[in-house]
Image 1 (tube, each protein chain N blue to C red):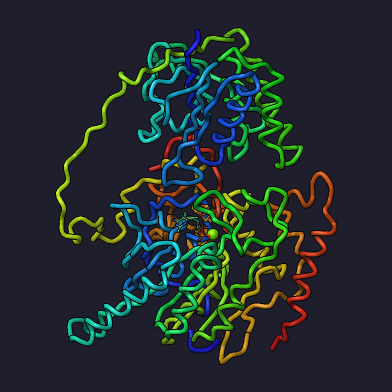
Image 2 (image 1 turned 120 degrees about the vertical axis):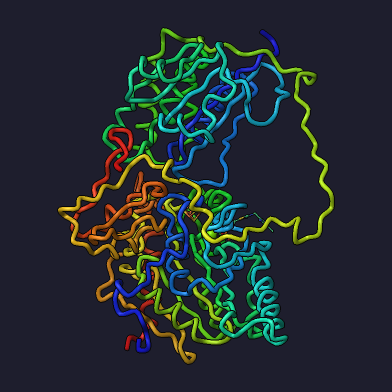
Length: 310
Length: 304
Ligand SMILES: Cc1ncc(C[n+]2csc(CCOP(=O)(O)OP(=O)(O)O)c2C)c(N)n1
Ligand code: SF4
Ligand SMILES: [Mg+2]
């Protein structure tokens, strides 16, 4: 299988350890003697926004660069990113791509939703993250699953990679990460090696970039200028949310300036009755208002467990 | 404080001049401060930005601002502000800009830029008496590029480039600015909105260089859960780690003195970037040295 390249993509949100998971998997493969590339990829958006990391590994030099277009293995740490088009979870997925989702929904639900042509596995949420407001161990669970599905990483190398990459975050965090990774490593043992490496992509197979001829324009036309105010509101950052603040009208004392003035995104205003109202199109789910409300009238509800209120 | 519109939180306008939908992290303390500042300044404002996290507020074709926004190179925001101010003045002189249509020019910069490569342009703008408000949101590191240490990273803080904790102390940007004798200098924080609003209000009534240093708790770079944003800010003030002050008539005035300062440990413990000071064993020497520098600061403060 000389020249074959493993291509793994890990999806999730900023803050869920996706970048670290990529590094852990990369280091584990390196310890097994592979040549490795691992890199996170995110846009202008931050914590809470969809991101992905990718890992390539081969027994010889890797000549490919850039994001992975044709993955052998795709792992989704946070199932809420699947519906975000910009996250590109399904990009380049074929019948030979193995998919893994960390989800509370069972496998048949995901099969029905995604109709994958290839194998699909669902991992339960890591014990460490159940009931927690933010998912901190899903990335590590995916790293463990990836290591097992590739079938070329030993548990010892996985453990060593976690110790190396997490050094400095404190013993407790390392231990819980080890536990989360190991559990999924073990859970997928009967599928060890299911994700096979793909053939190297020859330079001749690359698609040529399309060049667009641009005329020199007067600077005022050629400069990127926005003439409208607050056009950012067209961007629905509500899709970042994993936890939703819910205002309980019966507890709300109508002192909306308290919660509203603490919201970094300006996503809280007063309704006609004076009760605080959350703009779910834009609320990123930071939870600052939940803590700020002196009357505990705002509850933090995991996004996945409920329907979006009208 | 007399002559202020802001006696209570309720008095702060909530016109939502800064739109939602920006790329800042959930729970960003810098964004909270910028929102409050825009609200007080109004929409006749030009924000001139140095490269940093807040650059991503305006990514074509999206902008959250009701006023204008101009992106400049990292070291050059005060020079950009000078250009904008000059252009407005020329238009006014030619009778092409009515006084009521004038705009106020505001620099929006991070601490890395403000305390490093942007410092000389800032000093020069103060020397020239430029009429502008300079806002530095201080997240104590190069946030946009992954929180490397900046000159304003505090002692002991772990960053991407100080994995065992910074051995350098935080640069005193307030002191440096004040020594340049601009028209107005103040510190603030988003979790004290009334104090911040009064300072912005006061600055907007003064001609000349006005500088505002706003502590910007950063969940991503500092390692705390996003919902703790306001709590971290309160601890910064309550422990005396972040003094709220302004320079009035050449004299430093503290606008909110913690009645009984809580141990600075309470503030440090709440943040992942200081976790190594507590685990696996307490780094007594560093903890004591941080507390001592806070105590030493407050010993110099004469209240009243
Ligand atoms: C001359 C120059 N050097 C480096 C960079 C890369 N860069 C972009 S943002 C940034 C960090 C700026 O830090 P700070 O001023 O503290 O703002 P923050 O990112 O924390 O908001 C750096 C180093 C740049 N844009 N220009
Ligand atoms: S890295 Fe910090 S300062 Fe930058 S957007 Fe995120 S929270 Fe704000
Ligand atoms: Mg900074």
